[in-house]
Every structure is written in C-alpha cells, then in structure tokens.
Image (cartoon, rainbow, N blue to C red; front, side, top):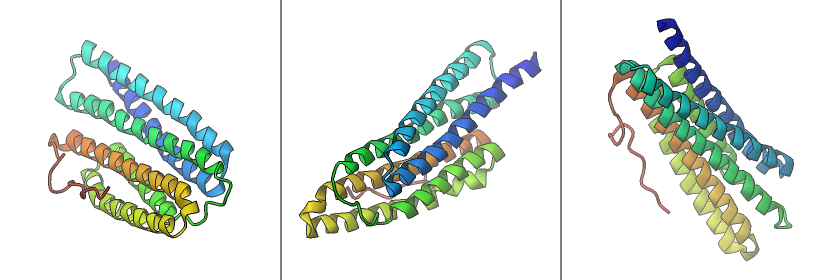
Length: 227
C-alpha cells in the first residue's frame, strides 16, 4: 500500500515537470512567432495554453484527492502544496504566452514592419533560463538553485524597464509607431511576469526542501515597479 501511495505522488510530480517543460516550450514559441511574424505559430501557442490549463486541473484534482484520502505526513503535504501552488504559477506562464500570441495577431494587422524588438529576445532567453532553473530546482531538490532565481529576476526587471524607455522614445519620435510600441511594451511586461512566476516556483521549492517560507524576505524581494 505504501508503494501505491508513493506511485501516486510520483505521478503528480511527473505531471508538474511536464507542465514546466510545456511552459518553457510555449514561451520560446511565442517569441519565435513574434520574431518571424508567424500567425501559425501564434495559433499553436494558443493550443498549447489549453494543454497547460488541462494539466493544472489534473494536478489540482489529484492533490486534493491525495490530501483527502491518504492522510499524508508533513513532507508529503509540503510536496502537494508546492504542486498545487506551482501548477497555478505555471498556468499563469501559459496565460502570459497566450497573451503574447494574441498581441502578435494584432501586430500583424498594423500593415507595417515591426522593426527592432528592443531587448525582448534577450529577455526571452533570460526568462526561459529562469523557468529551467525553477524546474531543475524541483527535480534536483536544489535549495541553492531555487534561491538563485531572485537575482536573475532583478536583471529581467531592469531589462523590462529599459524596453519601456526605448519603446516609448520610439513612439514619441514617430507617432505612426505608437500602436506597435504599445503592443511590444505589453509583450515585454508579459515576459517580466513570467520571470516572477518562475521566482514563485523557486520559493515553493525552497519551502519544500527546508520547511521555511522565504516569501517577502530580503533574499527574494522584487524591485519596485516603475509603471
């Protein structure tokens, strides 16, 4: 019976890892669609978001069932809590990528080239690395990797602010660019939020490993927003 319980927990863990991998893929594809102005890829992103939503429902349902029926010990409760909270953060990653895909469709209707994407491609690589590190910290149960995420997130925040300044300046100089600039500003903001969700997963992994809540501490405090 104990082995059966362990297999149930492992199945939940596997689903969370699968969800994380899909989130990495969907973020990469959303910016690929932007760079290539590819509406087909943007549509594929929207379909992947539906898959991520379904995984969230499965993980939540299985966690509630286990908590209700198996009388889990403290370490298992922390794991189930991580999975329930973590799958919500990952679902939000999918939502942000879906939002990017929808903005790509609006950009395609502008009738002119998007031009330089400011720091968006660099920012994408940074948040994908954040997601990878968050997922690996869970797989490897690495407290150090989980706690490395806030510092990388500060760099993402800085780049988001720089993108805002560059895109606003372009819009001021060229009124015909305003509609494009606004969409790119929101795309940059979506990437910044994805980084925040990666940090949240890292905080949850830290709690799993050390039973210590690190939210809102100096080690993970975010930079203040500028807009």
